[in-house]
Amino acid sequence: MKRAYIVGGILVLAFAALGVSQFKSLLTPYVGFQEAMASETQVQVKGKIVRESVRFDREANRLIFDITDEEGRRMTVEYGRAAPGNFAQASHVVAVGQAKNGVFEARDLLIKCPSKYQGETYTGTGE
Image 1 (tube, one colour):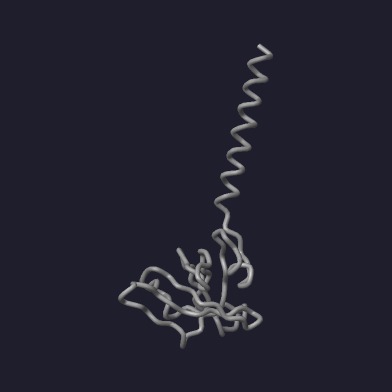
Image 2 (cartoon, helix red, strand yellow):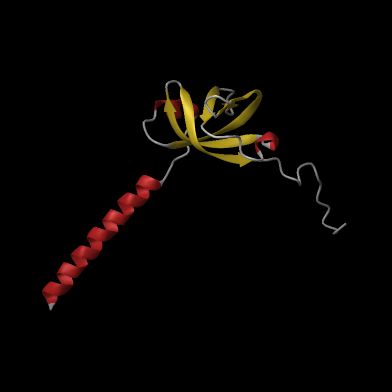
């Protein structure tokens, strides 16, 4: 009976360790531009969209644009699909992907649009 508990406990621990390692591999960390360009794995970078840089390459079906970080560094992002529906109103973006050949190739874009409450003042009176 004790042997069954020991074997069962070992199996539970082995599956727990496997689950944790698989979960860690799914996490995509936020990194800065320099680290993103040096990384060989999927990462997330966030930045402000440089509006004048936005273009769409119809032949390659790629959205290409630049983003800047808080220090003013600039990075080119290529997204292999059409622009998301709310991209035109977006101020910032989180790009999920990997750097290749000097550009950040995004597999996903998370769009941050300006808040509809931006600029409004809360008075607390319900008016």
